[in-house]
Image 1 (cartoon, rainbow, N blue to C red):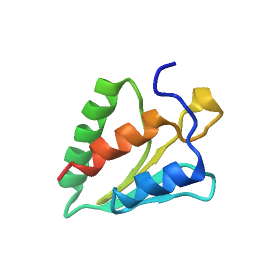
Image 2 (cartoon, rainbow, N blue to C red; image 1 turned 120 degrees about the vertical axis):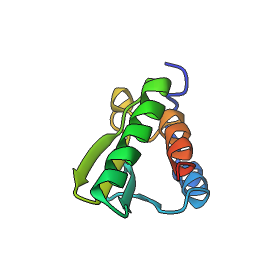
Image 3 (tube, rainbow, N blue to C red; image 1 turned 45 degrees about the vertical axis):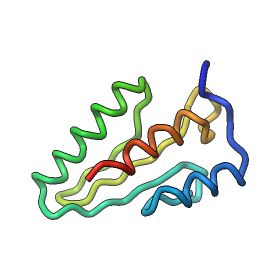
Length: 97
């Protein structure tokens, strides 16, 4: 699968450095926890993430509670590892307002 090359620790660290707010979770996933100004803003953010993900054919794990949205990115077909596809989606999400 194109873009599903598993990344090493250095590549992941470099990608995270370019995307403020994103971290590497204990289980190795790219993770974001974002608190929005309102529940409506959280829903709007989720919709925007969904559109990006759908466009890339790659979908995050998502958790939403009121104003807080948590995202996790791994490539399941690569053994739940971080791949180029995850970084591409992370970068696109990082550009959302």
